[in-house]
Amino acid sequence: MKFEVKTYNALPCELEIFTINGKDADLQDFGEVHTEYGGEPYTCNILGFEPLLPTDKVIKKYKLTLQDYSDICDALKDAFKTGYCGWCI
Image 1: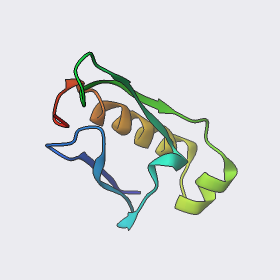
Image 2 (image 1 turned 90 degrees about the vertical axis):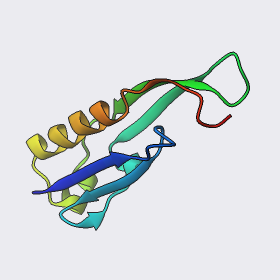
Image 3 (image 1 turned 90 degrees about the horizontal axis):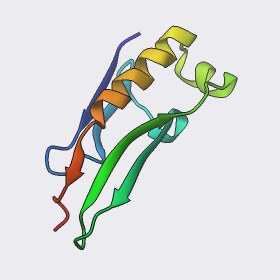
Image 4 (image 1 turned 30 degrees about the horizontal axis):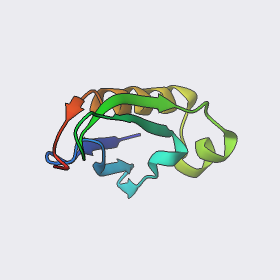
Protein backbone atom coordinates (compact mmCIF):
# COMPACT_ATOMS: atom_id res chain seq x y z
CA MET A 1 0.00 0.00 0.00
CA LYS A 2 1.32 3.41 -0.98
CA PHE A 3 -0.17 6.76 -0.08
CA GLU A 4 0.70 10.44 -0.44
CA VAL A 5 -0.49 13.34 1.72
CA LYS A 6 0.42 16.96 1.01
CA THR A 7 -1.22 20.24 1.98
CA TYR A 8 -1.11 23.37 -0.16
CA ASN A 9 1.77 25.71 0.74
CA ALA A 10 -0.51 28.75 0.72
CA LEU A 11 -3.52 26.97 2.21
CA PRO A 12 -2.29 24.57 4.90
CA CYS A 13 -5.80 23.60 5.99
CA GLU A 14 -6.56 21.92 2.63
CA LEU A 15 -4.99 18.96 0.90
CA GLU A 16 -3.33 19.42 -2.45
CA ILE A 17 -2.60 15.71 -2.77
CA PHE A 18 -4.22 12.80 -1.00
CA THR A 19 -3.87 9.53 -2.86
CA ILE A 20 -3.90 5.89 -1.89
CA ASN A 21 -2.33 3.46 -4.34
CA GLY A 22 -2.32 6.20 -6.97
CA LYS A 23 -6.05 6.99 -6.70
CA ASP A 24 -7.62 10.11 -5.21
CA ALA A 25 -8.76 9.59 -1.63
CA ASP A 26 -11.45 11.41 0.35
CA LEU A 27 -10.29 13.07 3.58
CA GLN A 28 -13.76 12.66 5.08
CA ASP A 29 -13.34 8.89 4.98
CA PHE A 30 -10.57 9.24 7.58
CA GLY A 31 -11.58 12.23 9.73
CA GLU A 32 -11.67 16.02 9.69
CA VAL A 33 -9.48 19.04 10.17
CA HIS A 34 -10.38 21.18 13.16
CA THR A 35 -9.83 24.92 12.97
CA GLU A 36 -10.60 27.77 15.32
CA TYR A 37 -11.00 31.20 13.83
CA GLY A 38 -8.55 33.82 15.06
CA GLY A 39 -9.10 37.34 16.30
CA GLU A 40 -8.49 38.94 12.91
CA PRO A 41 -10.78 38.40 9.92
CA TYR A 42 -9.85 35.42 7.73
CA THR A 43 -7.29 34.01 10.16
CA CYS A 44 -7.44 30.76 12.07
CA ASN A 45 -5.55 28.31 14.19
CA ILE A 46 -5.38 24.85 12.70
CA LEU A 47 -5.87 22.64 15.71
CA GLY A 48 -5.11 19.42 13.88
CA PHE A 49 -6.64 16.37 12.34
CA GLU A 50 -9.17 14.28 14.25
CA PRO A 51 -9.32 10.74 12.85
CA LEU A 52 -12.44 8.63 12.71
CA LEU A 53 -12.55 5.03 13.79
CA PRO A 54 -12.04 2.78 10.79
CA THR A 55 -15.16 1.31 9.20
CA ASP A 56 -15.45 -1.82 7.10
CA LYS A 57 -16.72 0.33 4.23
CA VAL A 58 -13.56 2.50 4.20
CA ILE A 59 -11.22 -0.46 4.74
CA LYS A 60 -12.77 -2.24 1.75
CA LYS A 61 -13.01 0.91 -0.40
CA TYR A 62 -9.25 1.51 -0.23
CA LYS A 63 -8.23 -2.16 0.33
CA LEU A 64 -6.45 -1.33 3.60
CA THR A 65 -5.36 -3.19 6.68
CA LEU A 66 -6.03 -1.63 10.08
CA GLN A 67 -2.31 -0.76 10.25
CA ASP A 68 -2.54 0.97 6.84
CA TYR A 69 -5.50 3.00 8.10
CA SER A 70 -3.58 3.99 11.22
CA ASP A 71 -0.50 4.97 9.17
CA ILE A 72 -2.63 7.18 6.90
CA CYS A 73 -4.26 8.89 9.89
CA ASP A 74 -0.83 9.51 11.43
CA ALA A 75 0.35 11.10 8.17
CA LEU A 76 -2.76 13.29 8.09
CA LYS A 77 -2.14 14.38 11.70
CA ASP A 78 1.43 15.35 10.75
CA ALA A 79 0.28 17.20 7.62
CA PHE A 80 -2.13 19.40 9.54
CA LYS A 81 0.25 20.46 12.36
CA THR A 82 0.33 24.04 11.21
CA GLY A 83 -0.83 26.23 14.07
CA TYR A 84 -1.73 29.85 13.34
CA CYS A 85 -2.45 30.69 9.73
CA GLY A 86 -3.15 34.04 8.10
CA TRP A 87 -3.08 33.00 4.46
CA CYS A 88 -6.76 33.81 3.92
CA ILE A 89 -6.18 37.51 4.67
